[in-house]
Amino acid sequence: MASAATEVDVIIVGAGFSGMYMLHRLRGLGMSARVLEAGKTVGGTWYWNRYPGARVDIQSLEYSFSFSPELEQEWQWSERYAPQAELLRYAEHVADRFDLRSDMQFETRVTAAHWDDADQRWRVTTDTGTAFRARFCIMATGCLSVPTNVDFAGIGDYQGKIYRTSQWPHEGVDFTGQHVGIIGTGSSAIQSIPIIAEQAATLTVFQRTPNYSMPAHNGPIPEDAVAAWRANREAFRAQSRGTPGGFWNEASERLALETPPEERVAEYERRWQVGGFRILSAFADVPVDNAANATVAEFVAGKIREIVKDPAVADLLTPKDHPFGTKRPCVDTGYYATYNRSHVRLVDLRATPIETFTAAGIRTSGEDFAFDAVVLATGFDAMTGALDRIDIRGKGGVAMKDRWAHGPRTYLGLMVAGFPNLFTITGPGSPSVLTNMMSSIEQHVDWISDCLAHIASHQQASIEASAEAEAAWVDHVNEVAAMTLLPQANSWYMGANVPGKPRQFLPYAGGLDVYREHCAGIAARGYEGFELRSAAG
Ligand code: FAD
Ligand code: N01
Image (tube, rainbow, N blue to C red; front, side, top):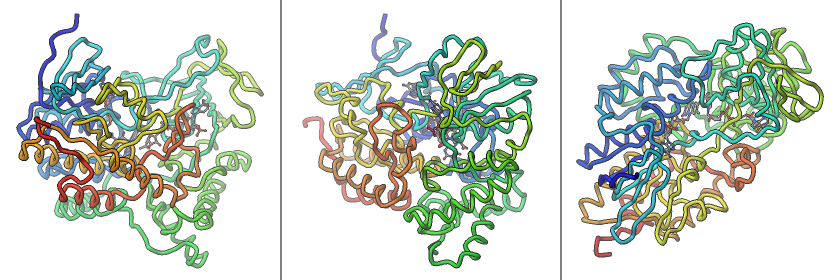
């Protein structure tokens, strides 16, 4: 039987980095809050994604909270790109240090959130039967927290083991001596393939679309770099905040098409040697001009040809259907070189598609494969997936899913017209997944906190995005995306990886620096585009 609803000021859904920091800030405002989380502990992404090789692709010194200088001084990252276990330890440490768990409820999935216009409260229900009434509801449900439903024919008949990268067993998996297949060549696959190949007797990679990947050149962070960071952390953080990506990436104003070819290649080479995303910001015209973009695409293709010994395999691994950077590029350790190993095989699903799973393994149009285990690295229902799975109803009982039937509509990625007092952290229409997510999370949480403080100090009862402001923002998000090459790819940014999902560029491509200023201006002008109402209406 459902229990009586517990009353709190704010319900936060999700205990990843967004939900954790949101709770911390709400405590500072003196508001009561409860975090509801489906997983068993904090960490979100880093709790669920435990596949071999899982680690960040933004350097850890920047992919970490900046809100507490003390936290920063006491935490030491072991590597430039921290692995999943360390990120989870970090999340646990933050939870303990700021005593967050006492207001968190784990193994609790929120199933519905309904706005009650009469008493101006959200009614939140969960799969455990616990229910809540809250003035505010904050969705910290994650952009990449719901795996896609891949529905391969015959998958139920398969007798071997199936593992999803995003729901990896906590005890780990030992592939030693096994024949393993992996479907997908996105970031999760590209990180795990080299490590699975170390263990497995054979590894067969089923590729539908090749991705661009850059070397991480991972390793310990040099001590002098850590010392410099500690001594100047505020300046480093300010520098990151002033960038479009929320991390410092040596952005250049130079144009690829106006740079002599040898100089251009030398610049790509220098940045390739630094590793990670550095090559992305080599020239300002690469994200917006196909000819400029082709210069970096050809450079990376050359790298693939250099590393992969079999020219046919190198060719298969070379992206041809999307400009560089229009699908999230990957950062790897030894990915391309793994294909030089004799027990690793690449299968081109464009030439020979998967027809069905069988009891023994996978049948493509060309061949039958037998596997002890198959890994699904098939991605996420990004940005809207977690919200779609909650029955969210706003004013007049309107379902968010229906409002968003033709694609998500938000104001700033923060609020939705008709859904008062409901915020989305890194929601669709915000820079989010195009940035260092830690920077975007902190910016959103800080903005929401300031907004709630404003509401309290002005004795307001509710805030809601106006339909006009929302429509203008949606247009702006689309216009900005159209100025770039980003919509040219069939990417999850476009919703293209989920059958039936409306095609719309989901994040805001205008840059976190520009967006941050925009959000600050809106707040300074009395929350322009938002309707604030007192209890009397
Ligand atoms: P999440 O960490 O996704 O947390 C959301 C939480 O909400 C989850 O724990 C989920 O269980 C919970 N939840 C969702 N729905 C419900 C519900 N109905 N009821 C209860 N609980 C619910 N970003 C970067 O910037 N750099 C990186 O290097 C990077 N690496 C990544 C690697 C992987 C493998 C993945 C999948 C993503 C990566 N990201 C990266 C993006 C990453 O998701 C963010 O960096 C960040 O961790 C998001 O934090 P969050 O709290 O917003 O969301
Ligand atoms: O998922 P993806 P991901 N049959 O969607 C293929 C973050 N992240 O989990 O491209 C055959 O990128 C699909 O093929 P195609 C990061 O933001 C970061 O790897 O659709 N194949 C693709 O190859 C990232 O972008 C890190 O043709 C199918 C793959 O599966 C995001 O999370 C690490 C298929 C899915 O790739 C998602 O990454 C991990 C089918 N039916 C994740 N369905 C870091 O490095 C899908 N595919 C920090």
